[in-house]
Image (cartoon, rainbow, N blue to C red; front, side, top):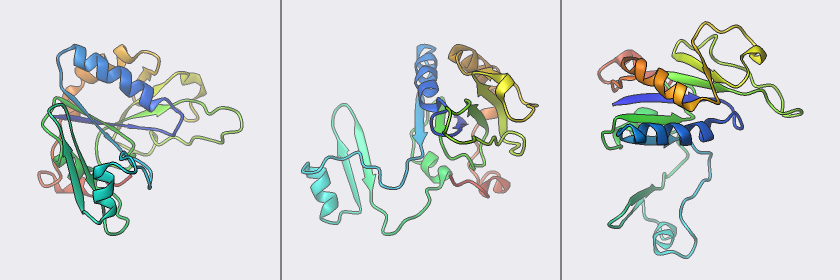
Length: 189
């Protein structure tokens, strides 16, 4: 299984890019999963539904399944930062896992950078200091705030990004941290 983190600020185009990459990889016959880091109080359940009522009653986990899909909701007793490797271990084996967020994860990354809209503040880049950033995807390389030594990918060319990913697939081969102890540090969002 290959794993790649797409790291970047909100509004940089990560989700739109991932939608396109998923479709392109699937069109090649590859199985793709997505692992998304969410903010504190997200909820996929609906008030009043049986599963919501079970959670409200105190269930630690609620697993909902049909003949078409499965969803697992787990309530933590206290706030904990999710471990990306523990989450990856819960996924089925697929060809690619695209991770959105988890910018500090000890995993290979593509940094997604788009100049912020006026008044939205600066968007500092991580690529000069993070050796796990293997490429930078942007819509305007001339506007990048620091020089880039990694390959530059066109944010508006998802097919080109997929081609680059496939050409460099060995760089994204996943090894759980128990196989490489040095990978275990610095892996939280």
